Length: 481
Image (cartoon, rainbow, N blue to C red):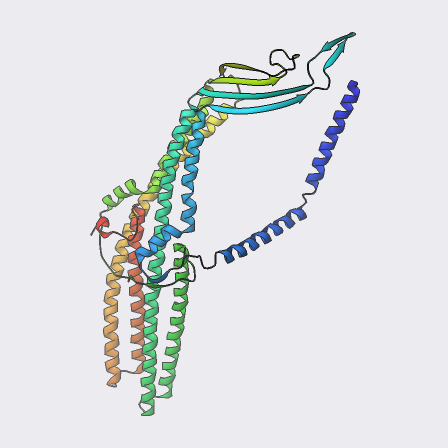
Protein backbone atom coordinates (compact mmCIF):
# COMPACT_ATOMS: atom_id res chain seq x y z
CA UNK A 1 0.00 0.00 0.00
CA UNK A 2 1.37 3.35 -1.02
CA UNK A 3 1.93 6.24 1.36
CA UNK A 4 -0.76 8.19 -0.49
CA UNK A 5 -3.37 5.47 0.12
CA UNK A 6 -2.44 5.30 3.78
CA UNK A 7 -2.80 9.06 4.14
CA UNK A 8 -6.22 9.03 2.46
CA UNK A 9 -7.47 6.29 4.78
CA UNK A 10 -6.25 8.26 7.81
CA UNK A 11 -8.05 11.39 6.58
CA UNK A 12 -11.25 9.39 6.04
CA UNK A 13 -11.13 7.99 9.58
CA UNK A 14 -10.53 11.44 11.12
CA UNK A 15 -13.40 12.89 9.06
CA UNK A 16 -15.79 10.22 10.32
CA UNK A 17 -14.80 10.88 13.92
CA UNK A 18 -15.26 14.66 13.52
CA UNK A 19 -18.65 14.17 11.81
CA UNK A 20 -19.83 11.82 14.58
CA UNK A 21 -18.75 14.27 17.30
CA UNK A 22 -20.51 17.13 15.53
CA UNK A 23 -23.68 15.08 15.20
CA UNK A 24 -23.67 14.18 18.90
CA UNK A 25 -23.08 17.74 20.09
CA UNK A 26 -25.60 19.14 17.63
CA UNK A 27 -28.36 17.10 19.29
CA UNK A 28 -27.86 18.97 22.59
CA UNK A 29 -30.08 21.94 21.82
CA UNK A 30 -31.59 24.16 24.51
CA UNK A 31 -34.99 22.56 23.91
CA UNK A 32 -33.52 19.10 24.35
CA UNK A 33 -31.77 20.13 27.57
CA UNK A 34 -35.01 21.62 28.92
CA UNK A 35 -36.87 18.43 28.04
CA UNK A 36 -34.21 16.32 29.80
CA UNK A 37 -34.51 18.49 32.91
CA UNK A 38 -38.30 18.13 32.94
CA UNK A 39 -38.05 14.36 32.58
CA UNK A 40 -35.45 14.25 35.36
CA UNK A 41 -37.69 16.27 37.71
CA UNK A 42 -40.68 14.07 36.96
CA UNK A 43 -38.57 11.01 37.67
CA UNK A 44 -37.40 12.55 40.96
CA UNK A 45 -41.00 13.30 41.96
CA UNK A 46 -42.13 9.75 41.22
CA UNK A 47 -39.21 8.41 43.22
CA UNK A 48 -40.21 10.68 46.12
CA UNK A 49 -43.78 9.32 45.98
CA UNK A 50 -42.49 5.74 46.01
CA UNK A 51 -40.11 6.51 48.88
CA UNK A 52 -42.94 8.12 50.84
CA UNK A 53 -45.09 5.03 50.36
CA UNK A 54 -42.23 2.75 51.39
CA UNK A 55 -41.46 4.81 54.50
CA UNK A 56 -45.10 5.15 55.55
CA UNK A 57 -45.32 4.15 59.18
CA UNK A 58 -41.54 4.09 59.65
CA UNK A 59 -41.03 7.81 60.40
CA UNK A 60 -39.89 8.81 63.84
CA UNK A 61 -42.87 10.05 65.81
CA UNK A 62 -42.63 11.86 69.12
CA UNK A 63 -45.57 11.28 71.41
CA UNK A 64 -46.51 12.17 74.97
CA UNK A 65 -44.58 14.36 77.39
CA UNK A 66 -41.54 16.11 75.92
CA UNK A 67 -38.89 17.72 78.11
CA UNK A 68 -36.17 20.06 76.94
CA UNK A 69 -33.53 17.36 77.47
CA UNK A 70 -35.52 14.89 75.39
CA UNK A 71 -36.00 17.43 72.60
CA UNK A 72 -32.23 17.98 72.40
CA UNK A 73 -31.61 14.23 72.43
CA UNK A 74 -34.01 13.68 69.53
CA UNK A 75 -32.43 16.54 67.58
CA UNK A 76 -28.93 15.09 68.00
CA UNK A 77 -30.04 11.74 66.60
CA UNK A 78 -32.47 12.89 63.92
CA UNK A 79 -31.53 16.36 62.65
CA UNK A 80 -30.89 16.11 58.89
CA UNK A 81 -28.34 18.93 58.76
CA UNK A 82 -26.26 17.36 61.52
CA UNK A 83 -26.38 13.95 59.83
CA UNK A 84 -25.00 15.50 56.65
CA UNK A 85 -22.14 17.17 58.56
CA UNK A 86 -21.25 13.87 60.26
CA UNK A 87 -20.44 12.42 56.84
CA UNK A 88 -17.45 14.79 56.76
CA UNK A 89 -15.74 12.42 59.21
CA UNK A 90 -15.74 9.76 56.51
CA UNK A 91 -14.31 12.32 54.08
CA UNK A 92 -11.51 13.02 56.57
CA UNK A 93 -10.67 9.32 56.84
CA UNK A 94 -10.55 9.09 53.06
CA UNK A 95 -8.23 12.08 52.90
CA UNK A 96 -5.82 10.39 55.33
CA UNK A 97 -5.75 7.24 53.21
CA UNK A 98 -5.16 9.37 50.11
CA UNK A 99 -2.24 11.14 51.78
CA UNK A 100 -0.49 7.81 52.42
CA UNK A 101 -0.27 7.49 48.65
CA UNK A 102 2.64 9.92 48.78
CA UNK A 103 4.82 7.59 50.88
CA UNK A 104 3.60 4.08 50.10
CA UNK A 105 4.63 2.17 46.96
CA UNK A 106 2.45 2.27 43.86
CA UNK A 107 1.82 -1.05 42.15
CA UNK A 108 0.13 -1.45 38.79
CA UNK A 109 -0.39 -4.18 36.25
CA UNK A 110 -0.96 -3.50 32.56
CA UNK A 111 -1.26 -5.32 29.30
CA UNK A 112 -0.95 -4.39 25.64
CA UNK A 113 -1.61 -5.93 22.27
CA UNK A 114 -0.11 -4.47 19.09
CA UNK A 115 -0.47 -5.51 15.44
CA UNK A 116 1.87 -4.27 12.73
CA UNK A 117 0.79 -3.81 9.14
CA UNK A 118 3.63 -6.11 7.94
CA UNK A 119 6.29 -8.48 9.20
CA UNK A 120 8.82 -7.80 6.42
CA UNK A 121 10.15 -4.70 4.72
CA UNK A 122 11.96 -4.45 1.40
CA UNK A 123 14.78 -1.92 1.15
CA UNK A 124 16.65 -1.54 -2.15
CA UNK A 125 15.69 -5.01 -3.28
CA UNK A 126 16.57 -6.66 0.01
CA UNK A 127 13.80 -8.11 2.19
CA UNK A 128 14.31 -7.68 5.92
CA UNK A 129 12.43 -9.53 8.66
CA UNK A 130 10.99 -6.93 11.08
CA UNK A 131 9.50 -9.36 13.55
CA UNK A 132 6.06 -10.87 14.16
CA UNK A 133 3.02 -8.79 13.26
CA UNK A 134 1.31 -9.54 16.62
CA UNK A 135 2.90 -8.42 19.90
CA UNK A 136 1.71 -9.13 23.45
CA UNK A 137 2.95 -7.75 26.74
CA UNK A 138 1.99 -7.94 30.43
CA UNK A 139 3.74 -5.50 32.75
CA UNK A 140 4.13 -5.26 36.51
CA UNK A 141 5.29 -1.82 37.70
CA UNK A 142 6.28 -0.90 41.26
CA UNK A 143 7.18 2.70 42.15
CA UNK A 144 8.37 3.78 45.59
CA UNK A 145 8.48 7.53 46.29
CA UNK A 146 11.73 8.43 48.07
CA UNK A 147 11.81 12.22 48.12
CA UNK A 148 9.29 14.73 46.79
CA UNK A 149 10.62 17.88 48.36
CA UNK A 150 8.55 17.38 51.53
CA UNK A 151 5.23 17.25 49.68
CA UNK A 152 4.37 13.75 50.94
CA UNK A 153 4.97 14.49 54.60
CA UNK A 154 3.16 17.82 54.25
CA UNK A 155 0.16 15.99 52.78
CA UNK A 156 0.18 13.55 55.71
CA UNK A 157 0.30 16.38 58.23
CA UNK A 158 -2.47 18.16 56.35
CA UNK A 159 -4.67 15.06 56.41
CA UNK A 160 -4.33 14.80 60.19
CA UNK A 161 -5.06 18.49 60.54
CA UNK A 162 -8.11 18.05 58.34
CA UNK A 163 -9.31 15.19 60.54
CA UNK A 164 -9.09 17.40 63.61
CA UNK A 165 -10.72 20.27 61.73
CA UNK A 166 -13.57 17.95 60.80
CA UNK A 167 -14.04 16.99 64.45
CA UNK A 168 -14.26 20.66 65.37
CA UNK A 169 -16.68 21.31 62.52
CA UNK A 170 -18.85 18.46 63.74
CA UNK A 171 -18.72 19.87 67.27
CA UNK A 172 -19.79 23.24 65.88
CA UNK A 173 -22.66 21.58 64.02
CA UNK A 174 -23.67 19.71 67.18
CA UNK A 175 -23.77 22.97 69.12
CA UNK A 176 -25.77 24.56 66.32
CA UNK A 177 -28.27 21.71 66.46
CA UNK A 178 -28.54 21.95 70.24
CA UNK A 179 -29.05 25.69 69.98
CA UNK A 180 -31.76 25.29 67.36
CA UNK A 181 -33.55 22.62 69.40
CA UNK A 182 -33.39 24.57 72.65
CA UNK A 183 -34.54 27.86 71.17
CA UNK A 184 -37.34 26.11 69.27
CA UNK A 185 -38.46 24.42 72.49
CA UNK A 186 -38.29 27.68 74.44
CA UNK A 187 -40.29 29.49 71.76
CA UNK A 188 -42.88 26.72 71.88
CA UNK A 189 -43.02 27.20 75.67
CA UNK A 190 -43.52 30.94 75.22
CA UNK A 191 -46.35 30.61 72.72
CA UNK A 192 -47.97 27.91 74.84
CA UNK A 193 -47.96 30.21 77.89
CA UNK A 194 -49.27 33.09 75.80
CA UNK A 195 -52.02 30.85 74.44
CA UNK A 196 -53.02 29.91 77.97
CA UNK A 197 -53.17 33.61 78.86
CA UNK A 198 -55.49 34.35 75.95
CA UNK A 199 -57.65 31.36 76.86
CA UNK A 200 -58.01 32.80 80.35
CA UNK A 201 -58.79 36.17 78.76
CA UNK A 202 -61.59 34.55 76.74
CA UNK A 203 -62.99 32.83 79.84
CA UNK A 204 -62.98 36.14 81.74
CA UNK A 205 -64.61 37.94 78.81
CA UNK A 206 -67.33 35.28 78.63
CA UNK A 207 -67.96 35.55 82.38
CA UNK A 208 -68.07 39.34 82.17
CA UNK A 209 -70.53 39.23 79.27
CA UNK A 210 -72.80 36.92 81.25
CA UNK A 211 -72.61 39.29 84.23
CA UNK A 212 -73.42 42.34 82.08
CA UNK A 213 -76.39 40.56 80.49
CA UNK A 214 -77.75 39.78 83.97
CA UNK A 215 -77.31 43.41 84.98
CA UNK A 216 -79.16 44.53 81.84
CA UNK A 217 -82.14 42.34 82.77
CA UNK A 218 -82.24 44.10 86.12
CA UNK A 219 -81.81 47.50 84.49
CA UNK A 220 -78.37 48.29 85.87
CA UNK A 221 -76.58 47.93 82.50
CA UNK A 222 -77.41 49.20 79.03
CA UNK A 223 -77.37 47.61 75.60
CA UNK A 224 -74.17 49.52 74.95
CA UNK A 225 -72.53 47.76 77.88
CA UNK A 226 -73.59 44.39 76.47
CA UNK A 227 -72.31 45.32 73.01
CA UNK A 228 -69.03 46.48 74.45
CA UNK A 229 -68.65 43.16 76.27
CA UNK A 230 -69.39 41.20 73.09
CA UNK A 231 -66.76 43.17 71.18
CA UNK A 232 -64.28 42.49 73.95
CA UNK A 233 -65.08 38.76 73.79
CA UNK A 234 -64.67 38.69 70.00
CA UNK A 235 -61.30 40.41 70.27
CA UNK A 236 -60.20 37.94 72.94
CA UNK A 237 -61.19 34.98 70.80
CA UNK A 238 -59.41 36.40 67.75
CA UNK A 239 -56.22 36.85 69.77
CA UNK A 240 -56.53 33.33 71.15
CA UNK A 241 -56.89 31.90 67.63
CA UNK A 242 -53.83 33.86 66.52
CA UNK A 243 -51.71 32.40 69.30
CA UNK A 244 -53.14 28.96 68.57
CA UNK A 245 -51.90 29.26 64.99
CA UNK A 246 -48.53 30.45 66.24
CA UNK A 247 -48.33 27.44 68.53
CA UNK A 248 -48.90 25.07 65.63
CA UNK A 249 -46.17 26.87 63.66
CA UNK A 250 -43.58 26.67 66.43
CA UNK A 251 -44.35 23.00 67.00
CA UNK A 252 -43.80 22.39 63.29
CA UNK A 253 -40.39 24.04 63.55
CA UNK A 254 -39.58 22.04 66.69
CA UNK A 255 -40.50 18.75 64.98
CA UNK A 256 -38.37 19.65 61.98
CA UNK A 257 -35.40 20.49 64.20
CA UNK A 258 -35.76 17.22 66.11
CA UNK A 259 -36.07 15.27 62.85
CA UNK A 260 -39.41 13.69 63.78
CA UNK A 261 -42.65 13.36 61.87
CA UNK A 262 -45.00 16.32 61.65
CA UNK A 263 -47.68 13.89 62.79
CA UNK A 264 -46.12 13.85 66.25
CA UNK A 265 -48.26 14.79 69.23
CA UNK A 266 -46.37 16.03 72.26
CA UNK A 267 -46.99 17.89 75.47
CA UNK A 268 -44.29 20.27 76.70
CA UNK A 269 -43.39 19.40 80.27
CA UNK A 270 -40.82 22.10 81.10
CA UNK A 271 -42.02 25.58 82.00
CA UNK A 272 -40.50 29.01 81.64
CA UNK A 273 -38.96 30.06 84.93
CA UNK A 274 -36.62 32.82 85.96
CA UNK A 275 -33.35 31.61 87.53
CA UNK A 276 -30.96 34.56 87.84
CA UNK A 277 -27.23 34.03 87.49
CA UNK A 278 -24.17 36.09 86.60
CA UNK A 279 -20.81 35.40 85.02
CA UNK A 280 -17.65 37.49 85.01
CA UNK A 281 -16.75 38.87 81.57
CA UNK A 282 -13.12 37.84 81.78
CA UNK A 283 -14.09 34.27 82.66
CA UNK A 284 -16.64 34.18 79.83
CA UNK A 285 -14.01 35.35 77.32
CA UNK A 286 -11.51 32.78 78.63
CA UNK A 287 -14.03 29.99 78.16
CA UNK A 288 -14.85 31.25 74.69
CA UNK A 289 -11.20 31.22 73.60
CA UNK A 290 -10.80 27.70 74.96
CA UNK A 291 -14.13 26.21 73.94
CA UNK A 292 -15.46 27.79 70.74
CA UNK A 293 -15.18 25.33 67.84
CA UNK A 294 -15.14 28.09 65.20
CA UNK A 295 -11.91 29.44 66.69
CA UNK A 296 -10.37 25.98 66.45
CA UNK A 297 -11.61 25.65 62.87
CA UNK A 298 -10.10 29.01 61.91
CA UNK A 299 -6.72 28.17 63.48
CA UNK A 300 -6.65 24.70 61.90
CA UNK A 301 -7.48 26.26 58.54
CA UNK A 302 -4.40 28.45 58.87
CA UNK A 303 -2.24 25.40 59.58
CA UNK A 304 -3.75 23.54 56.65
CA UNK A 305 -2.91 26.47 54.39
CA UNK A 306 0.67 26.44 55.69
CA UNK A 307 0.92 22.82 54.58
CA UNK A 308 -0.55 23.74 51.19
CA UNK A 309 2.22 26.32 50.87
CA UNK A 310 4.80 23.66 51.76
CA UNK A 311 3.41 21.43 49.01
CA UNK A 312 3.70 24.27 46.51
CA UNK A 313 7.29 25.00 47.60
CA UNK A 314 8.18 21.32 47.13
CA UNK A 315 7.99 21.88 43.35
CA UNK A 316 11.40 23.60 43.64
CA UNK A 317 13.04 20.41 44.93
CA UNK A 318 14.06 17.29 42.97
CA UNK A 319 11.74 14.28 42.95
CA UNK A 320 13.31 10.90 43.58
CA UNK A 321 11.52 7.59 42.99
CA UNK A 322 12.71 3.99 43.04
CA UNK A 323 11.11 1.77 40.43
CA UNK A 324 10.90 -1.88 39.48
CA UNK A 325 9.41 -3.12 36.21
CA UNK A 326 8.87 -6.70 35.09
CA UNK A 327 7.49 -7.58 31.66
CA UNK A 328 6.25 -10.80 30.11
CA UNK A 329 6.17 -10.37 26.35
CA UNK A 330 5.77 -12.13 23.04
CA UNK A 331 7.94 -11.80 20.99
CA UNK A 332 11.02 -12.06 23.16
CA UNK A 333 11.76 -8.79 25.07
CA UNK A 334 15.41 -8.86 24.00
CA UNK A 335 15.15 -10.27 20.48
CA UNK A 336 11.98 -9.01 18.84
CA UNK A 337 12.37 -11.37 15.88
CA UNK A 338 12.09 -14.39 18.20
CA UNK A 339 8.31 -15.00 18.46
CA UNK A 340 8.17 -16.73 21.86
CA UNK A 341 7.12 -15.73 25.41
CA UNK A 342 9.83 -14.56 27.79
CA UNK A 343 10.19 -12.13 30.67
CA UNK A 344 12.54 -9.32 31.60
CA UNK A 345 12.90 -6.94 34.49
CA UNK A 346 14.70 -3.76 35.26
CA UNK A 347 14.96 -1.50 38.31
CA UNK A 348 16.51 1.82 39.16
CA UNK A 349 16.25 5.27 40.62
CA UNK A 350 14.43 8.05 38.79
CA UNK A 351 15.52 11.60 39.63
CA UNK A 352 13.69 14.60 38.22
CA UNK A 353 15.22 18.03 38.77
CA UNK A 354 12.91 20.94 37.94
CA UNK A 355 14.63 23.71 36.02
CA UNK A 356 11.94 25.93 34.51
CA UNK A 357 8.23 25.28 34.11
CA UNK A 358 7.07 28.55 32.62
CA UNK A 359 6.58 30.30 36.00
CA UNK A 360 3.89 27.82 37.06
CA UNK A 361 5.64 27.15 40.39
CA UNK A 362 5.99 30.85 41.09
CA UNK A 363 2.30 31.34 40.36
CA UNK A 364 1.21 28.51 42.67
CA UNK A 365 3.42 29.70 45.51
CA UNK A 366 2.14 33.26 45.16
CA UNK A 367 -1.44 32.00 45.32
CA UNK A 368 -0.80 29.85 48.40
CA UNK A 369 0.97 32.71 50.19
CA UNK A 370 -1.99 35.00 49.50
CA UNK A 371 -4.42 32.34 50.75
CA UNK A 372 -2.34 31.94 53.91
CA UNK A 373 -2.48 35.68 54.54
CA UNK A 374 -6.23 35.61 53.94
CA UNK A 375 -6.71 32.77 56.46
CA UNK A 376 -4.65 34.64 59.08
CA UNK A 377 -6.87 37.69 58.60
CA UNK A 378 -9.92 35.44 58.88
CA UNK A 379 -8.58 34.01 62.15
CA UNK A 380 -8.32 37.50 63.62
CA UNK A 381 -11.83 38.27 62.41
CA UNK A 382 -13.23 35.11 64.03
CA UNK A 383 -11.56 36.04 67.32
CA UNK A 384 -13.03 39.53 67.20
CA UNK A 385 -16.44 38.09 66.38
CA UNK A 386 -16.14 35.72 69.35
CA UNK A 387 -15.44 38.67 71.66
CA UNK A 388 -18.40 40.53 70.20
CA UNK A 389 -20.75 37.58 70.72
CA UNK A 390 -19.62 37.02 74.32
CA UNK A 391 -19.97 40.66 75.29
CA UNK A 392 -23.27 40.97 73.46
CA UNK A 393 -24.57 37.83 75.16
CA UNK A 394 -23.55 39.12 78.59
CA UNK A 395 -25.25 42.46 77.95
CA UNK A 396 -28.32 40.72 76.58
CA UNK A 397 -28.49 38.51 79.65
CA UNK A 398 -28.21 41.51 81.97
CA UNK A 399 -30.91 43.42 80.09
CA UNK A 400 -33.16 40.35 80.04
CA UNK A 401 -32.77 39.96 83.81
CA UNK A 402 -33.71 43.61 84.34
CA UNK A 403 -36.70 43.18 82.04
CA UNK A 404 -37.93 40.18 84.03
CA UNK A 405 -37.79 42.17 87.27
CA UNK A 406 -39.64 45.09 85.70
CA UNK A 407 -42.33 42.86 84.15
CA UNK A 408 -42.74 40.98 87.42
CA UNK A 409 -43.52 44.25 89.20
CA UNK A 410 -45.79 45.39 86.37
CA UNK A 411 -47.70 42.09 86.51
CA UNK A 412 -48.26 42.45 90.25
CA UNK A 413 -49.52 45.98 89.75
CA UNK A 414 -51.83 44.85 86.92
CA UNK A 415 -53.34 42.14 89.13
CA UNK A 416 -53.97 44.67 91.87
CA UNK A 417 -55.42 47.15 89.38
CA UNK A 418 -57.90 44.58 88.07
CA UNK A 419 -58.90 43.59 91.59
CA UNK A 420 -59.62 47.21 92.51
CA UNK A 421 -61.50 47.80 89.24
CA UNK A 422 -63.71 44.74 89.80
CA UNK A 423 -64.45 45.80 93.40
CA UNK A 424 -65.30 49.32 92.25
CA UNK A 425 -67.52 47.96 89.46
CA UNK A 426 -69.43 45.70 91.86
CA UNK A 427 -69.91 48.60 94.23
CA UNK A 428 -70.97 50.92 91.43
CA UNK A 429 -68.05 53.28 91.88
CA UNK A 430 -66.37 52.42 88.53
CA UNK A 431 -67.93 51.73 85.15
CA UNK A 432 -67.50 48.81 82.78
CA UNK A 433 -64.80 50.56 80.75
CA UNK A 434 -62.51 50.69 83.81
CA UNK A 435 -62.83 46.93 84.28
CA UNK A 436 -62.15 46.22 80.62
CA UNK A 437 -59.14 48.53 80.61
CA UNK A 438 -57.75 46.92 83.75
CA UNK A 439 -58.27 43.45 82.28
CA UNK A 440 -56.56 44.44 79.02
CA UNK A 441 -53.66 45.85 81.03
CA UNK A 442 -53.36 42.59 82.94
CA UNK A 443 -53.42 40.48 79.79
CA UNK A 444 -50.72 42.65 78.22
CA UNK A 445 -48.64 42.45 81.40
CA UNK A 446 -48.90 38.66 81.48
CA UNK A 447 -47.92 38.36 77.82
CA UNK A 448 -44.92 40.65 78.32
CA UNK A 449 -43.92 38.81 81.48
CA UNK A 450 -43.74 35.47 79.70
CA UNK A 451 -41.89 37.17 76.84
CA UNK A 452 -39.30 38.45 79.32
CA UNK A 453 -38.88 34.93 80.75
CA UNK A 454 -38.35 33.64 77.22
CA UNK A 455 -35.82 36.37 76.42
CA UNK A 456 -33.89 35.56 79.58
CA UNK A 457 -33.86 31.82 78.86
CA UNK A 458 -32.66 32.40 75.30
CA UNK A 459 -30.06 34.90 76.52
CA UNK A 460 -28.59 32.18 78.70
CA UNK A 461 -28.50 29.81 75.73
CA UNK A 462 -26.84 32.55 73.67
CA UNK A 463 -24.13 32.94 76.30
CA UNK A 464 -23.44 29.20 76.40
CA UNK A 465 -23.21 29.16 72.62
CA UNK A 466 -20.93 32.23 72.60
CA UNK A 467 -18.59 30.44 74.99
CA UNK A 468 -18.65 27.24 72.92
CA UNK A 469 -20.03 25.25 75.83
CA UNK A 470 -23.50 24.41 74.58
CA UNK A 471 -23.87 20.70 75.26
CA UNK A 472 -27.53 20.63 76.21
CA UNK A 473 -29.84 22.53 78.55
CA UNK A 474 -27.85 25.25 80.31
CA UNK A 475 -25.85 23.87 83.19
CA UNK A 476 -26.13 26.56 85.83
CA UNK A 477 -23.25 25.19 87.87
CA UNK A 478 -20.88 25.75 84.95
CA UNK A 479 -22.38 29.03 83.90
CA UNK A 480 -22.05 30.55 87.33
CA UNK A 481 -24.53 31.54 89.95
